[in-house]
Amino acid sequence: MAAIGINRETIRKAWSAVGVVRPVFRQHRWRLLAGFLALAGVNSLQLIIPRIIRQTVDNLQQGIATQAGLLHFALLVLLISLGIGVCRFGWRYLILGFSRILEVDLRNALFAHLLTLDRPYFQKKPPGELMALASNDLSAVQMACGMGLIAFSDALFMSMATLGFMAYIHPGLTLLTVLPMPLLAGLTSYLSARIHHRFKKVQEQFSRLTEFSRDTLSSIRLVKVYTQEQDRTERFNTLGQSYVRDNLRLALVQGTLFPVSGMVANVSMLLVLYFGGRLTIRGAITIGDFAAFISYLFMLTWPIMALGWVANLFQLGVTSLHRIKTVLDAAPKLIEPAAPLPLPAVSQGFALRHLTFGYAPSLPPALKDLSLTIGPGVLGVVGRTGSGKSTLCQLLARLYPVPEASLFLEEQDINRLPLAGVRSQIAYLPQEVLVFSDTVAANIAMGKPDASPAEIETAARAAAIHGEILAMPQGYQTRIGEKGATLSGGQRQRLALARTLLLNRPILILDDGLSAVDTQTEHAIIANLRPYLAQKICIIVSHRLQALADADRLVVLAEGRVVEDGTHVELLANGGLYATIHAHQGMQEGCQ
Image 1 (cartoon, rainbow, N blue to C red):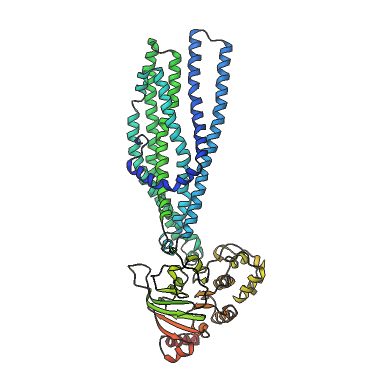
Image 2 (image 1 turned 120 degrees about the horizontal axis):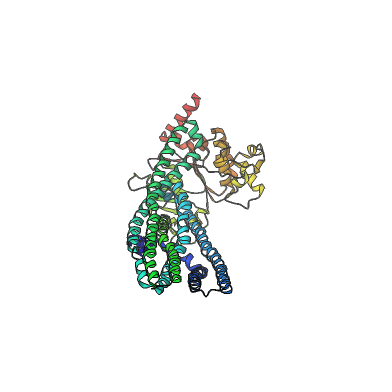
């Protein structure tokens, strides 16, 4: 293995990562076997041609060549060439086709696994880095498992077979030919070790460049409002220059491999021309043998030069495969229970018992010893910024793991219930609403693709956006821009609310999802929800207390704890934090 520049560390990493692609190799083993047989056929047929050349030259030298004999040799070479063409098409279709199949399977596996990961993972991994894995890294793996395998197998077979034929002609001359090989092996090993490190830096820089581009384009309106075009351009240019510098440092090593391989091949040719020529003059070998030996040496030149290229492809492929394997090895913190309990019918709701939760060990808990019951009806959750309202909603929606025996659904520990089953009972509208570059109807029906137009319209009416949709150019079939660029903030929120209502699930969680609409509209929308909420559990978070005045029950959070619990009238009468916030908001509205 050292002959192609793969050191022990690379072997260890390659072996640890090969498990990612081993199932695909196993599944397509017969295709690969046929492809490598076709490759062997090409090489075997190519090795015959110098033998024909040898016999032809010797016949010409001895004066026994005839026109019929020469025509026979020419037709034989033509027939062999046709066989080489057929076999070459076969291995290209079978092996290169396999590398594309592997690329597709690996991309699908990567995408499917990403969908299983939870929010804590994506908070650490920016989308740009994951996009780089699905582009540059997958291409590097595809090249290593396609042309890399072909070049390695071809070089191994051709070098051994060619050296065998050369040794049959003259062993001593063959030994002189391979004298420079150890130098090539040592230099290739030395350079390949550096390719791995430098390519890793290139891929990491490409990830940063991709993430910066994605972040800038997704927030282009904010960039323009704050006139940050020049600053973003300069920062992008700086990242691009770093990417170019890393690529040039990589190219410096990569570019050295081919010249070194070519130099070794030329040195071998020089030795053959000098010493082989002397052997021919002395009659130790015939002119035909000399011509055949040179032909075999030309065939050996490709394997020699391929050594550096193969080492380069394998180093790049191993590095990229390891980056992909790191993602595939990532496990969600929210996991399915080993023996899940049957999902109960939702009627009583949630119970939180001394729940303490923090996003990271180094951060203070967002919720502290929280005990709360949430049953049928509308529960309003209020509190100052940072009090834990959104954290509570995210835990109820099963977006983060919770300690054992701290959160219950229908008196069952939620950690013992199937994760997808619990989520299927919840319709969740987060603070940051997302809409897609699709039709209005498709956006509303995202969670229920088979919804009828009447169901979609009913949900839109409840979200107070039906009239505005009808005013759009194509109504419900109007395509909205990327991330809802053609909609106002309030329209995006109401569109997302309609999507949530269409699910018609027993638990509804609205995490300040109407902050972009005015107070009167928010109050009207919440009133419209009443027909949807019969016998359901609804949690509504809002900073505006007036919108929650008609809630069946209100809880006030402060520093991750429940500090007040009651109806709107009761909390005002208590004169606590709720009354203070209510008075403050009343003064603000009076000033307006």
